[in-house]
Each structure stands twice: as structure tokens, then as C-alpha cells.
Image (cartoon, rainbow over all chains, first blue to last red; front, top):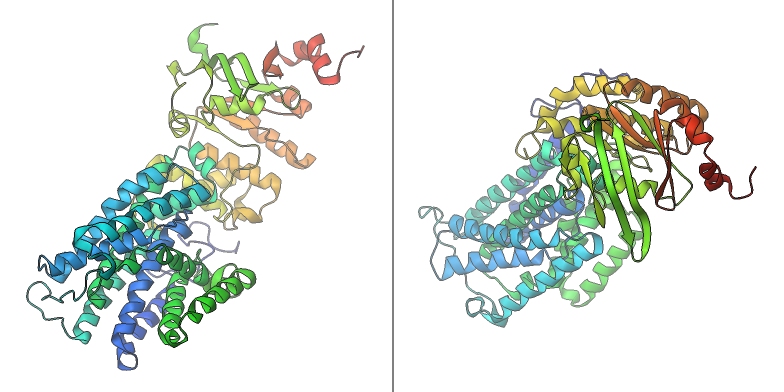
Length: 329
Length: 252
């Protein structure tokens, strides 16, 4: 590695030489493959299933922005995913808002909620941070159960698929698919950019050695709050989109089990990787969908996979792959 | 001694942990442009003093002034922004970042772009030349693209100093810069400290007395949280109380 020109702008250790966009070739190739997969996908697989996968991919990546790069384990991310899904469902159904506005409103409410909960939670570290986020998430769950507009145990059902921008009909699965595809991939690109930005570099420094970052003059709590809000906002986008796909916002979305599931997705795929949560989310959602006939056994299977993952490859599937290829993924 | 000669001064600095006086009524005056050493037996409160001065701990009582400004209630990150940067006993590097990136994190703090989340990090390339200069300065040019966790202990400390210097601080606080270091490294770091002390003030905690004798202008001896003696090496090494504190009663 030392024979490299010292003054060039290569991010070492790098995943191949960077292109003019600043994205390594390998990453570009993986992105292209992902885009291609989700474009061709609906011809072979059930579109609603793929849309579910995309929503959870976004949720997992948003969550991992906080865990993998902010170094903060939130155990209450369902609160943001779920509340955004309630808000967007309510906006579409009760107020007849267009899909893009419903999603924006849901996203915005998750951002606001993230700002409030984050400002309080980042004062604590490690397990205490996780517990504070969990406690707040339980409060959000309680509100979702009791508030008049959430429909209690029933949730908000039969959410209409209104006209996009008031003009375009997205009631067919294929049209909706294109809409979801654009949202999810735009957000994924944003997450990729955040991770590989100057801000992302500071986040990595804080994650690696918080005390040292402080001693260099970084006001670390501002960075933590910023990444927390970014993460909750994008988790909100995932939840809001999901509500329109399934035409349903329910208590499942705000339940603590959902918070646990997203932790599982990130860990299974590899929390210190960009692409890990995508793989993790895809695996978990696929299992839930295709093994649904096994009933409660899906949970047992999930648990087993989790235990195996933790014991055998702690860096997650993509983490292990990256180690094997000697390139960050 | 006028007040402007003093860059850092603590008055009646006290820290109490659950009934235990870790630092008890310590007065410390560091003159501008000197190397000042803080020595004392284990548990004397040296590191606690460091943590108090850099605001990683909040003093129970007393006041701290840096460059004529009362910093007693400031946050730790603000101290660094005023120009006083500390190192840690356990070498403080960012293990998974490369040597160059480690230094760049410091440059980035001073130059901005810190909250730019929408830009590619290639904009940070503009700091590479200066970061490289800092890396060369401490003799780590060959390791610029290695991650910090691949470095030997002595090199990690050198990297830490390079990172600190990138902030161009007026004052450095070094917590045991030579701890656990091989003799060859001790000489190298010693040389480095001497070199960087030009136009700077350094306060360091150090156990290696030959290093202390060689480098420092003033030495403050702490024992049981209190100042035992202060002066140059000759004064200190002949002080009865200091000998007693280090070797014990009955030494003749």
C-alpha cells in the first residue's frame, strides 16, 4: 500500500480506484446490480413482496446509519417507522392528501419526533441510551394504541392510493412499484453519501474514539443528534412508504419487536458495512414471507439464525465477505 | 512573575470522589513557553489534575484560568477550541482510520466542512498535503496509508502528537507520553517533544525521571492530591519530602 502516490485523494484502504463521482468501482458495480435486480425483479417476483423488501431495506439502512456509523444502538426505531406510517396513512385517508405529501408529512413527523427523543437520549451512552430509546418507543406505542385517529387494535386500514402529484394514477402495483423504487433508491443514495461525506468522517472518528474527538474540539453531542435525526427521518420515510404499499398502518409497525427486527437485520448483514443492512433486511423479509406457513416457527428460525450469525460471523454476512475480499463493502 | 507570563493557572483546584479527595487544593501555574512536568507516585492525582484542567472532569472547588480567561465552567470541546489540546495515557488514535485520515480529522475540525453530509468526502482531499506534512514531521510517512491499529505503540504516540499538532495548539497537555515505550522510541518522542516545544507551552505527566530531567523547565511534585514541591530538577531531586514520598521514610 505504501507505493501509492501519497498526495492522491484515494480513501485507503479503498475498494478499488475511485471514479470521478468519488465512489469506488466495486461499490458502483454493486449499486448497479441492486438497481438492475429491482428493475427486473417484478417480472419474476410478486411486486408487493419486493416493495416490502425495499421498504425494509431502507428502514434497515437508516437504522444502521445510526448504529454502524454513529455508534449508537437505538432500541426504539419502530417508534419512528411506525409513527410515520400512521401519519402518512391518516393523511392519505382522512385528509385525502397525495402520496408524495403523505410520505413527506410522515417523514417530517419522524424527524420531529427524532429531534425530541434524540435530544434527550444522546445524553446517555451504551445500554442506557438503548433503554432510553426503548422507553420512548413504548410511550409512542401506548399513544398509538390509545389515540383516537390510530384505530387502536385495528390500525388504519384501507389507506387509499391517491393520485401522485394529483395527476398520476399509481393504484396499479406496477405504477406504485416505480414510485417506491424511486423513493427508496434516492434515500439509499443519500445514506451512502452521508456515510462517505466529511460529516461521515467525523462520525467515524467519534465512533472510534469519542474522548479523543472531544479533545480535538468536536462538540460530539451535536453530531450524535444530527445523525440520530437523519436516521429517524429516513426510517420515517420507510414507514410512511410502507403504509401506502400495504394500505395499512398498524400496531405491528410501532411494536418493540419491530425495533428488535431492524437490529437483527443490521447485525445479520453487517453493521459496519454499507450494503450489509440491505442483505440483512432482504433475508429477514424473505424468511417471514416464504416461511409464513410455518407460523410461530419463523420466530424460532429467526432466533436460530441470529445466534448462528453472532457465533460464527460477528461482522455479519457482508462484513465477512468484505474481510474475505479485503475491501470495505 | 506577571500574570501575562502565565498561560495556565489553577487556584485551589479540588476534586472529591465520593468522600475521597483525589485532588486537594492544588495551585498550579504554568509559564508561557515552558515545558512543565507533573510528577508524583501512583495515585497522587496527576491524571485527575489533567482531567480537571482540560475539563474532562468538573472540579468540586477552585478556578482555572487559561490565557487570562476563566475556563472553570467550559465544556471539554471548547478548551480544545481555545488552543489547549490534551493527549491521553492510553494512546488516543482512531484505530480504523488510516494515519493520514487520523491527522485529517484534526485539520477538518479547524477548517470546516464538519457538517457537510451532502458532499463526497473527496473534498477532504484538499487537506491531504498538509496532513502528509504533519505525518512526515513525526516520521510516519511510510505508514500514511496504514490504519492506525497496525502501528506499533511508539508510532501510535507519534501519530497522536501529529494529530494534536495539526490543530496548532498554543498549549499541549501530554499524559505520560513515554509510558510503556521501548528505549529507542523514548528517545525519538523525547526529541520530538523538544522540537515542538518551540513557541509552545507543554504540560506533561511523566514517570520517566530522566526524560523529565532532560526536558522540563519546571517540575511540580504531587503526592496524595496535594502539591509537595515545585522547582527545577536540581531543587526537586534534593528535596527531602520528595525523596520521602518516592522512596519512603527512613531513607538516608
